[in-house]
Image (cartoon, rainbow, N blue to C red):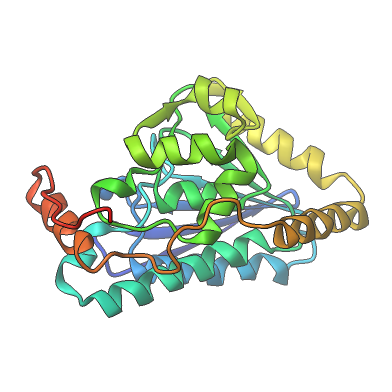
Length: 265
């Protein structure tokens, strides 16, 4: 097994890359922050995802989080000391990474143990298949932060769970437990925690045994269908709201409920 660990500047932040039996495995490792990704981690994740293509033996990519977390998404504390323009740029880089993973020519599998929140959920949605443990929790608590749902993120959700459920998750900020996430289609498979990694490898080997031509063709055909379909729910073209986002970040850092001033009209 080939193992490469990329250490980053944030405390205990690592992206771990492994190759075994035709399967590339990326592990997001930042346990002190629920595997939340810094801006540098998002960039490194994109580079490593592209690196999987350098080895022609890699047939499948698995993305997972360390321990009992998939990822809490972007590190919100980073936004407490930067301008709105820099925050917008950070989200654009995040979307670039997620889109890169979404369009990889090899099948991708998200292995979700514990919470996948916000941008972490979007990362999971960009994968072709999602396998969750009975401890998985999926949600988009962006309404607590003043983060706006851009059209691409909304489209990924609408394609899976429909317009009403998409709005439900944003309106309430609730986290779906594993059984409900499986029932509404956000998880393809629901496995016990102790069997999760073993099942993911078995699934990776099964997918990797199929015709590469067939796998690539279906990925491209499905993506063309998604790209040509109208976006059913028009969200903002930006990622952050100039009024609500700064208050949401301050409240997050100060561990208090946000007090939003912006009106709906």
